[in-house]
Image (cartoon, rainbow, N blue to C red; front, top):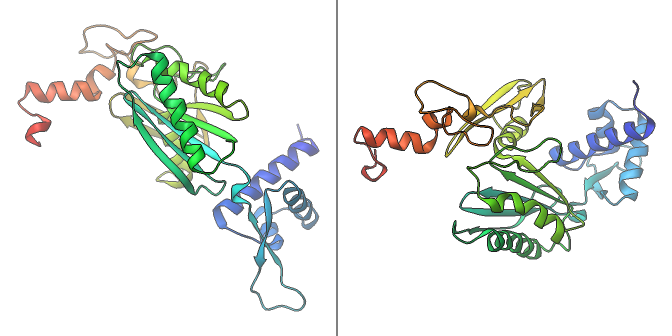
Length: 284
């Protein structure tokens, strides 16, 4: 099915903005060359993005040519502010950036496991608000949350898991309530790591790859044909739940104890090392 005119415009605008983010200021001619779009189409999108305040003239091309130099267009970095929230079992970290990805402010706060759900959520929300204020952001356009655990593909919320504190699941709703104008999205931390590697890291030239995550828990992210695959239940890559021989039981839908996690997670490795006389305190 061919794209509608509005869809085509949105795709072209997104492509142009991505190029301006990655390559820096560009002329209309350079955008035409890099996008493969026609001259009229590029002229239309440049006008559209300029009127919306997303791009502006930031200079002129230094080429030697007859007549006036071509205008250089760049992203208006402070047109919107974005925040990233890294949710850990023991605390949270927040980074606020502009549209060019420049970090404007960042901070972290530990959260005591005995703090209780309400106080823990309040600490995390207050940190987001404080860092946004320090960054000079009157409001946030988007708040992206990276968290361990399963994300329900139907609701976009963290699913119940016995390995996560209760405040993790309450945090998304609390942030949406306190920041009603912001788009709040949550994603599994391993999936986010894979997207980062695909865009800027070791997987930049790969359309299909698997990222293996070994830490406190175990997991994986699967990218096929350039797209992150979450699965119908959001469980693609949750290898910690795989039943394996050598464990005391079987994992459940919400608890990976008894699965691969029990053999390869950080606690299991530390326990195995201790059984053989190795410890972190001995530095080996």
